[in-house]
Amino acid sequence: MLKDQTLLEIEEWAQQKLSECEAGHDWWHIIRVRNNAKLIHKKEGGDWNAILLAVILHDIADTKFFDEVEALMLIEQKLNEKAIEQNTIDHVIKIIQNLSFSKQWSDSTFSSLELQIVQDADRLDAMGAIGIARAFSYGGHKGRDFYNPEISPQKYSNASEYRNSNSPTINHFYEKLLLLKDKMKTNTGKKMANERHRFMESYLEQFFNEWGETD
Ligand code: ADP
Ligand code: NI
Image (cartoon, rainbow, N blue to C red; front, side, top):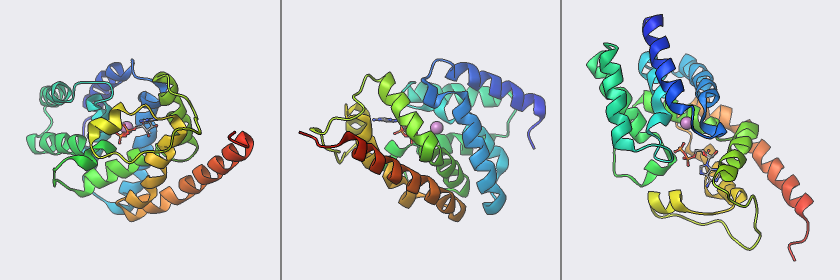
């Protein structure tokens, strides 16, 4: 088990790093993902230390906000400084490197139960009522339209196309959020995703009813 003081210092470091990210990727996101991960870990098992550290540190290496290579180096340095075991550090780094939705286009074959748990926990926070709030927060932060009936959802073929897209936020539901349910890795994650998925579907139904005719 990690010592409380060590954990606290790593958390404080991560919190400070995330303080400039938009509201959907702030420290509250980390707390919600940690809660999701705890529920999944309880049922599925896995190394809690690796899961917890990866949850706390995962968005510091998010390419939307930081340079990934530099961030991974800083994370490794920080974990070394706090005397975390080398094999845990290596595992945490691998989890973080392979976590993002945009990594579906990478050729990495790494997998572990702990990666699956952190990934499901992170993706659950992209779904449901919270997921909707986060999508509009991020879209607003990027100055995107929330909806434009003249622009259809796209199918991306690589990470940079996905990242640099200027799609309206409603399109992001079709380009990512509604796809997550079938990409959950753990049985517990799959069960937790169902209700959030249904909520997004009914939200979209209401949205289009209110929008009315498009011409
Ligand atoms: P990951 O965290 O797996 O790397 P993304 O970076 O694609 O996934 O997205 C993280 C969250 O950021 C999404 O769940 C969503 O809330 C928000 N987000 C990312 N891209 C968009 C977008 N184009 N439009 C609206 N929200 C987005
Ligand atoms: Ni995240």
